[in-house]
Image 1 (cartoon, one colour):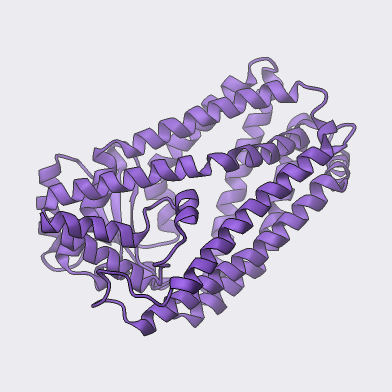
Image 2 (cartoon, helix red, strand yellow; image 1 turned 180 degrees about the vertical axis):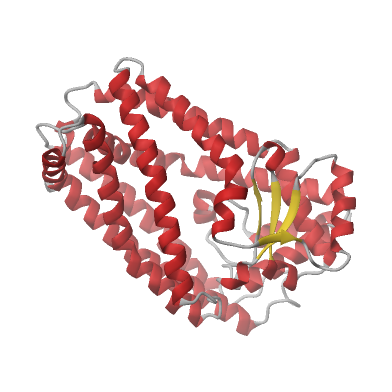
Length: 413
């Protein structure tokens, strides 16, 4: 069983690397061709820079992935999980606290191992291509705050979860799911006001005349968004973006200040309309429901499988604590989830196209949304030539060239 699991895992990893290699080979072959519709916006020099950036990001990601996979193989298949599990048992004989320590220390180790890659990405790679505006002081501040929040949340979640498991051994899967679902929704409510402001400054859109245009656009939708804010993203990077945050009465749309500097009012409104489209088409609650249903199924499967005495044996371990069994299940889950990646990606791309259609119908300016996407891809050095199979497998958004072509077709009707 252990050998079968190892081979399955290696095949899964190999499939991911093959897809990545296909994508890079496709870029090297077609990357020097400016796509139709992009001729006046991206010149060969900018395209070459975009290709180089994509290749370097891929190279860094590949090195990090290989290291992560090697360490995971050592941890799971070379006995280190058992050693670590027994060591945790010497620190506490409490079911709850040993479980909390198990995941806290494991997460801390993963974080420390990821620091060199984060530093290189921020201060070398991103700096080389003119994106980075983060200072070492700000990076350290962000790191400390994010880790403090992460450790606090992880400690609270694992403490409550293991307590519930101990309290209700035969029904814990229901109670843990209810608790996690409640916390996730609660975090969606408080994040815009308590967590996000710890990292960025949010204020009403300052662009002269834009606020009135936004209010007029919002009136057409009948959607009550608490605020349309701009965020000081330029403190850390010149990358531009926009996103929807919050839920219920605290939902709001956030625009990067870098995006506002790069785009015309019509383009900003088109991007804004796209984000509104996600809410009006029910994408937010649909994703939330799907996530919670998957969470419920995962909790039930974990309940059933942790009751199986043979679970530790699939990794050649005679005995494993409850926390170690959950780690094994998480590993199995990652393998099982891999074939479903293209399905989830397809659903996400479908939502993006629906939001594009909504924005076009609302504003009557498909060309503005198209030009905004061209600017976003140019300013962010996006890959304009992904391999079709790679894009279908991993892309949560349709390739930008396809989106622009579709939008320009709408403009011609």
